[in-house]
Image (cartoon, rainbow, N blue to C red; front, side, top):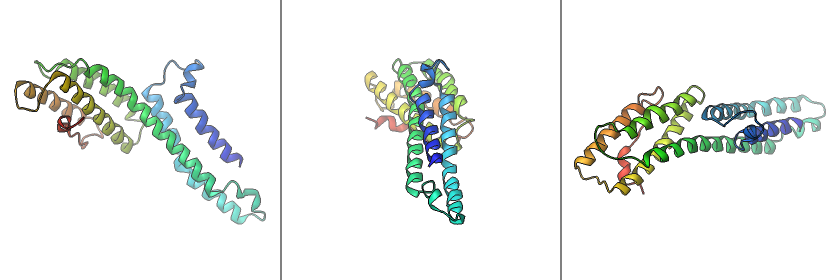
Length: 214
């Protein structure tokens, strides 16, 4: 029972300090950065991965114990199932928080996008060389390879949504005209740069979806 309480406490306190910005309010850190979120996510994932092993250990102790009732609450399948669910939910929330950081940056950058030479445009250069690169460098060596793909897949979806909105504002159509050609140059630059990052070489970006995104 105490073990379950400790694991629950670690989960709740970690998320209170990070997702709830409790560490900032306490003056421990100035801001909750992408790197801090990534490290927190990995900590929670580590505990989540070990939960089945912890349960198996106490199940074994229960089987060997002369008075199993003293350990029965610890090895309760329902308790561990609920604990795993809570860890999973908070891991998902951290992923969402990581995406929201870059989404705000993308929104601010793309809102001023103008399709005009020279290409790649200043907007796309800033987007890739400053924001995307900084985000990648903050998380790439911390998160798992699968989470890296997950994060950049979601990041790419947001990029397409925000770019599609900006193109509608600019009244740029998929018509093969001069502006369409300039935009294509920017998109090719974006694809080349993102897929140059280790771990993202095979990431499917499907940038043509900007013409069908609402």
